[in-house]
Image 1 (spheres, rainbow, N blue to C red):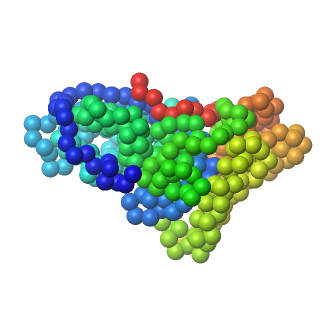
Image 2: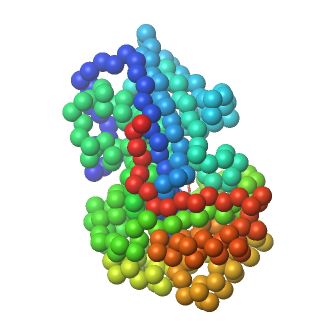
Image 3: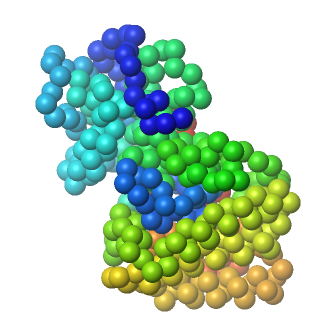
Length: 360
Ligand code: DP6
């Protein structure tokens, strides 16, 4: 498929008003997307676990205008109150997607959105938020074109979500999603994410992710700025190449359920992501002292307990603690006894692999 396949030729019905709600989850990357080209094309392929609990619920109400407006017309409510500072991101999203959703200026939209996690938790809501909005808009498009099939619906929802925020394209479905062209993954694409198409060992079923909220403060560096710093980065090419190789290695790991190898790839990816930030110009450090304390505790516990607990990080100080469901009790005890003390106000979120977005 090319981006031209997502430009509709015409619509068969006329819809004057309506309302739709989607709940869409966040996701946690195992192989990280860090660096992009023009039009939200990733510099390397990435793969993630779709989460279950961390999600955004968005209701889109739409009302056809008498005449097509010259600009996008919408109101935005976040947790029940108008939120002006979220509007520029939505306007940018509408601008980027207008070619593919030519009805955008023909309606007035009210977007009501809320998160299952606290806004100030340091958990990015762009993946869940942009995927929820993309799905609501696709639902309206499906009303305008009722013959649309589910395959196309999901592909285009992921394609649109990507234009809002890269990682959002991996939140449409579950349980493992891959985005970005990769020679060893059939049907992989830079334009949208696909469900991981190969065999996955049952050990990964219901894989647990406990998110330790180490620092709830606002991010020092936005992801967009971080991605840009990969342009003149001295290690960029090696990094992109490494992501491709790790994805190839992961295929066998997923198939065989080899958790020791899984841990090596996942932790190395997390540290590489942060190494890229530390070696860009300007350079920055998003880990906090408590992030490192937690990592060291995880390593010590893994060695002494023979469990398969490991960590990953996103572009911040919080730690995602990953472990198989059959080690849940033992690892959870360890988290509450030894790790919660390093969380801001003792806060953490228990999550696990989920099945993707749902229409409510
Ligand atoms: C570190 O998807 O937030 O979480 O495309 O600029 O919106 P934009 O970036 P974003 O970047 C996420 C980066 C990451 C790694 C990942 O999720 O793969």
